[in-house]
Image (cartoon, rainbow, N blue to C red):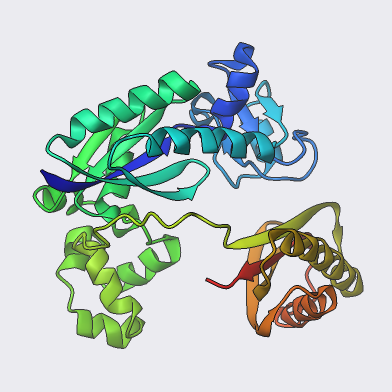
Length: 344
């Protein structure tokens, strides 16, 4: 018996839930996002595999998706339906004897379990999820959470058999030649910084001097990136119940806002809506963030920690306006978002 981490990732989750509700959409390019009207401003929340084949991706403007697939089926997001479907999957995962489940969001969770045959368990999980929820999932198998998460990408439909094992034994043969962007936790900006320092691949990052990167990229992040390159990470799944870390609201305007007073008024309005969510959650906000998307499509975020946690609408609105002051006015704004983060 050994302790294994399995990463369960639901395939095209939101689109799959919509297809379950509308079986006639099976196999069609389905795009979910905004109000479901691609002629209005909004972004793609998710796309079915058939839509992804045409280059449609999450975060893409709906209008761009429409240009790429004029005959795609566009649907509005239905969060309550996705939450219900997700909980059904998590109940299936918790039904396995000895399994510790750490929920990461609607469509993914880690499962920690003692077993001598993780592949058989992965097969059983995939079968049980499909039988009880009609949803398909991919399972990554690893000796820690990082490797299990990355393993999932090698098992995805169209590229793999539905599961894949990634451990210390095959980490460098599999990941060594890949770009650093392939690592969980390294995005485009970080990958660019590493490229500028001659660290292009996972193997190069793993061989880097942690002290040198600490001096260059920060005492915490520098060594952390080297650990990622070596495939090191948390080895035990936590059974602590998953809780929402933040609440947010945003609005995409059909006509850009050119007057900064209008931007400020919208920030206040959104902050009050977010406060309603904070009150409903029953937990005070500890940090407030503001997101602005400038025309044509540049997004910036700023945030600030509150002097003390609060659920007071006036204080949260004041904090949001103060955060807005960190932006330089002048450019037209097409989207505004306000986020309240809870204490962890």
